[in-house]
Amino acid sequence: MNSELYPGEAADALAEIHKRQQQVIDRALVPAWYWWVVGALMVVLAIGVDTRTHLALGITIPVFVVGMLAATGAAVRSQFLYARVHDRLLDGTAVIAILGFVALIVGCSLGIAFGLRAAGVSYPATIGCGVGGLVMGLGGPVLNRQLRRIMLGNRAGIKS
Amino acid sequence: MTVARFDELIHAPTRLSIVSLLAASEWAEFQFIRDSVGLSDSALSKQLATLEQAGYVEIGRGFVGKRPRTSARLTKAGRAAFEQHVAALQEMVVRSGSTILPR
Image (cartoon, rainbow over all chains, first blue to last red; front, side):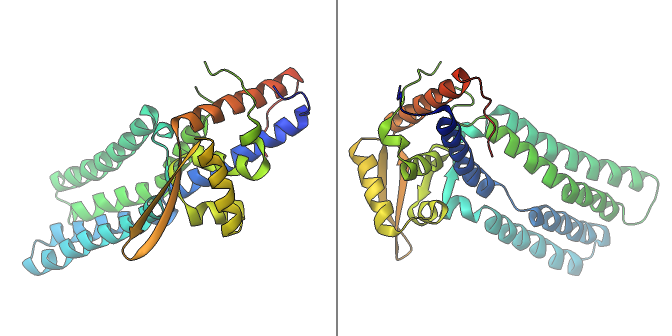
């Protein structure tokens, strides 16, 4: 142990460590726009499904696929170019949070869509995916905050 | 349980910042470390060389397309030394009766 180091200096060093690790973690999180773009693409695809014409499907399916690839590529770009967050930071709790969020979106979209279809409402998939997309846009940043909290909690020195 | 061990090599201000970044990463690209920590190319190279000589860091050199890319990652020994260093700092703060509040 270094006896020349004052506790205040040790606290400053810990704050510096926290700040630097937070920089890596913040870069790992997908940006807020991503959730709204994916939500909008879900609606685009659902319009094609509800319209049920070859032309609509021929337009909406490629828009969905290309849009998803482009948006996901842009969102995770920094993970491949700058720094990849350490695997240890994303533990089982983080995986459960992500899977829970996906289940919520899928359940919400399909549940509403099938419910409306059974009730004979027009454009059930579009409305279902619209609600799912809205939940995704609003809930995405909440998931981000949760993942950030989990990763900060799993940093070296916090959990061993 | 991590054993607390103060590490003089890691504790130097710029090296502490570099190792902290690397501790949260599988790997980090040279430019990202340089810009995050606010060092010049030569200053970062020098600090990484010191850490590499100590066996704390591995330097990877490769290409992305035609562009050369240098990345760094903590070795197992580097990660262990960092965790022990963090534990030593925490111990000092706790002993003093203060609380650890990141700013």
